[in-house]
Length: 120
Image 1 (cartoon, helix red, strand yellow):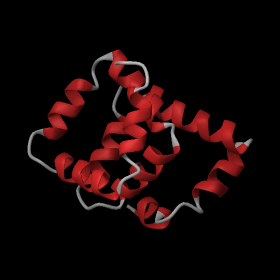
Image 2 (cartoon, helix red, strand yellow; image 1 turned 180 degrees about the vertical axis):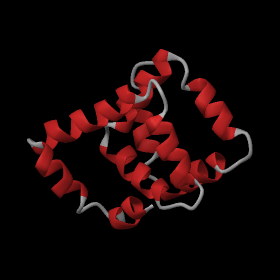
Image 3 (cartoon, helix red, strand yellow; image 1 turned 45 degrees about the horizontal axis):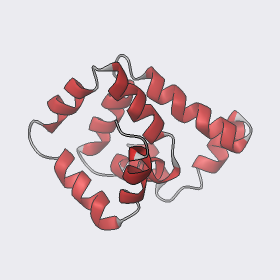
Image 4 (cartoon, helix red, strand yellow; image 1 turned 90 degrees about the vertical axis):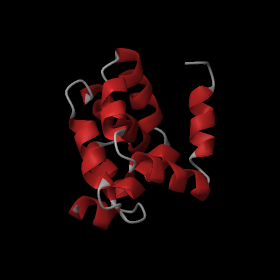
């Protein structure tokens, strides 16, 4: 992927209309298989890990965890074999940003709508 593309994706996800578009797209038939197929590629898994570790995408992931049907999609994607890099990258970023694992959970608990996301 081109240098700076991650920044463009993060900027894109700051718009509510863009997030709504992505949510609708992910709910279309066949998209789950396509995304998991893309995710087999190491470069795509690393890109996903880098984008998922940024603030706007993290908030968007939390929002998607609250969407019926997408909650399972996102959890399945994060827990898929090979996505431990993305999950670890997100956790590393959070720990680095917050300074400790305990503070990560304290900070995450303050994110908008996190209680609904965690309940799912």
